[in-house]
Amino acid sequence: GQQLNQSPQSMFIQEGEDVSMNCTSSSIFNTWLWYKQDPGEGPVLLIALYKAGELTSNGRLTAQFGITRKDSFLNISASIPSDVGIYFCAGLLGGTSYGKLTFGQGTILTVHP
Amino acid sequence: DGGITQSPKYLFRKEGQNVTLSCEQNLNHDAMYWYRQDPGQGLRLIYYSQIVNDFQKGDIAEGYSVSREKKESFPLTVTSAQKNPTAFYLCASSRDSNYGYTFGSGTRLTVV
Image 1 (cartoon, chains in turn blue, orange):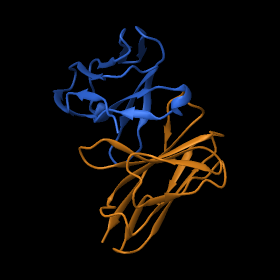
Image 2: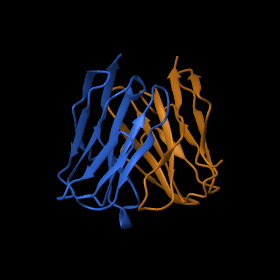
Image 3: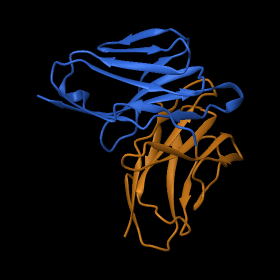
Image 4: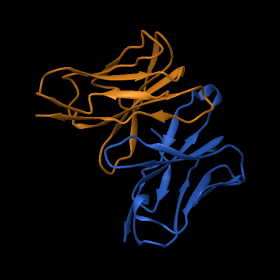
């Protein structure tokens, strides 16, 4: 099945640093989503983007829906230890594609105190 | 509070045995999904269901079976035909085709 190209695969940063990760696709999506997964748990939705060019913030998180509809990025500002986890991007075609999400491979974030 | 519940959290199975993973949601969502997660491989779709009594194969359906007799429930059976069943299994639901998923907390299956 198709998957998104998510990068970087992993990041090791110091507490207080900013983080940036992105996803690209050869296909157009109508919705971009960003999830965070804590160890041993299911992913939790962080931000949903529904419109090309849309820039949305959720606290220290900021995400953008690329203008071409083929990419998205997620920024985390002033990282803290609880930001540790796996971050997934996901694209949704919607409509007749029955809502099947296409996921990126994930970015593993480690934050050193 | 509405949510999606997977049980059990940890499951051990002997080789050659079938095992069923439970997934229940009280969000009144029409669509439900099963994903498998292996280290470094992201999420792979096993089966999905858009409506009661209907389901479709995902990308890695071989060795798995599902049923959707009730809107709230979408159990996954891992059969003995699944060659490498040890993994973390995630169930999800969504309101319709234009919204993202709500995930359960997962079941870790280990074949011993």
